Image (cartoon, rainbow, N blue to C red; front, side, top):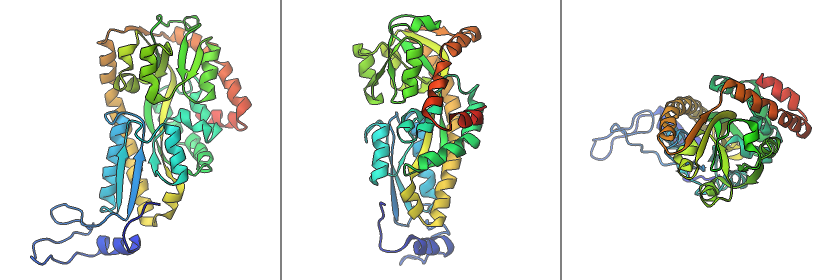
Length: 348
């Protein structure tokens, strides 16, 4: 655990949170009940430090939420917890950051759900095609019984879930041809995340799934290592994928969520009052992030529609064709995960 200072944080909090500070030698400043000066400056030294790494641009809803969380937590704890956010894959891929959390060198991450099956296979449920009807359905499931069940699985890997953030529904882009039917996917080399169900999805569509780290995807699309990819609009725009792809298909075939998580060992070693502050900051930031993601979605869509890409928006009938073509992916999930039927039922 990253900890600085000579005294136990509980003693510092007792002084900082319940007593008024003494006047300085000049008698000009007094601390309020939060350990901050009357001018709003935090006087408490950080007792705990959190490194929050993630892989996306800081100007996405997720990136901004990470900063928002850090600022909110520092405020709630009167500066006793300090948060450093490192975006844009500075600490490596999502998987590498989680491994660093397990080893104790990083405290927090908000990886996309497609990375988590390597640590808890049950999380493959998020890679099932057409799992959620809309964002309301996704939010209710992730913060309801589905999320509660999944949280237990991932905690066994040494991380604690604090909430689920919105990444948006995924869409196809490529540089070969418009995609209107499942047959149009035939033979395309598509970037696949590390989840085996994404590979199964592309196999069902007769497209080759190629595993490429997110940080390397732009270059791979630019150089033609792969023909296309799937991502929400937030990543398609902020990572500039639309600049190196010719065709955009609004398919909404999958959902990308982000899991706000903290090292379980770090969390359990925090005093109870700081655990409560972490929980509150996470809950408030989660609500903020979903609202921000919804606002940004329209802006991203406008960027795409003003680009040089040829755009196809699938009709409900066309989406039904994709749903039928990828039904076998659900069978793969049932074969690989013991509690698959119970988990799927929680979504429905």
